[in-house]
Amino acid sequence: MDDWIARTKRRHQLCLNWQSEGAVALSFHAPTGVAPDWSRWFQDPQAVLEGELAALRNRLAIGSDALPVAFVNFTAAVAFSMLGGEVDFHENGPVYHPLITDWSQLDGMTVPDENAGLLPQVRATIDHFRQHVPAGVEIIPPYIHTPLNTAALLRGAADFYADLCLEPERAHRLLELVTETAAVAARHLFAYLGRPATPYTNQVGFFLGDLLHLSDDCCVNLSPDFIREFDLAYVERLAERLGARFCTHYCVLPRDPAIHCLEPMCACPATPAIINQTTPEFFLEHYAQFEGRFALISQSGPYGRQLGATPRERLANFRLWAEDFLARFRGKSGLMMICHAPTVEEAREAFAIWDDLSCWPS
Image 1 (cartoon, rainbow, N blue to C red):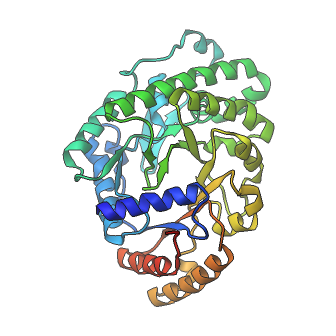
Image 2: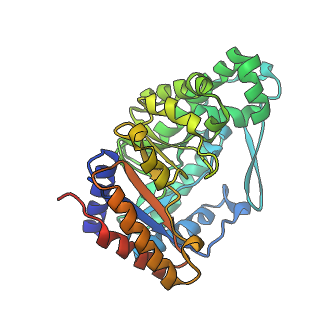
Image 3: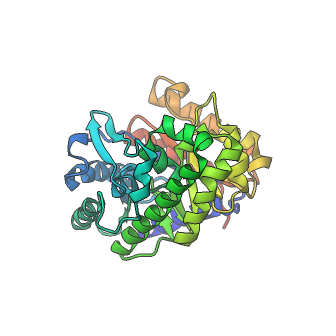
């Protein structure tokens, strides 16, 4: 396993550093059959562990370009809960109740300490993982959310977006508070794990080196100028606090790739990479805009029903697509991909096709 881990880390870094010369790291996933039990999630570490061990078994069986990790998943609740936000659950996941219904509540709020909110439960879950995760598997702490994301949850998204226009000074005060709280949480959890923040591997097994995974879904709702002022200004401040840069996630749709986010993100020194549903084809078509500035981990690698109704048909069509795409991608870099197959066996076969066609620098 050590050789596979070393090879996979090298591939990831070649892609992120624009040195893979036409090769693309590819992570294949397959269904685990283990559904999240949200009723137990933040209170029972075993509920988190069960899904992670199932995903880990799949990852090891497939053997693609994804590292063996176990993710302590606390969704967006860490900094939110530290500042007093309450989280409930329904069958599809957590529900965040806005805390700041009147801006006067902000006056009494201060940066909390390491025992606030859900941090004790996060530590208990890390301890549980340490007892049950196999040796050689990296435990990944809850990923960081942008101050913008957490502030929108604390205030309520609709009110907060209005506040950016109507109450910008108060919005900035909340963003400053959330930035410092997120820094406290991240520094504490990395210290609890006994490691520095970087080098870092994210929750889906990509080795990001000196980048941390950052969730920034709310940015798609802002204009480029507002992204710079209310989002990236605080991302840069958080990067300074943690001594790292970020690989940023924000969701996009095939019909709406959120192009307006690209320019400010590309220009921000703290965000040299993204992980989202931007397609490999979009990346290739807009390569000049990305090249050397903004690497992509695409969550929309082409696999599934669009390639056929049977495994044989899907694998044959995947080979045809892979041959064509890699020919057009020759000499380029900055791209990694995630694909989803119906079964572990099919994922393993599909990755073998990709790996056979890929030519990595020696």
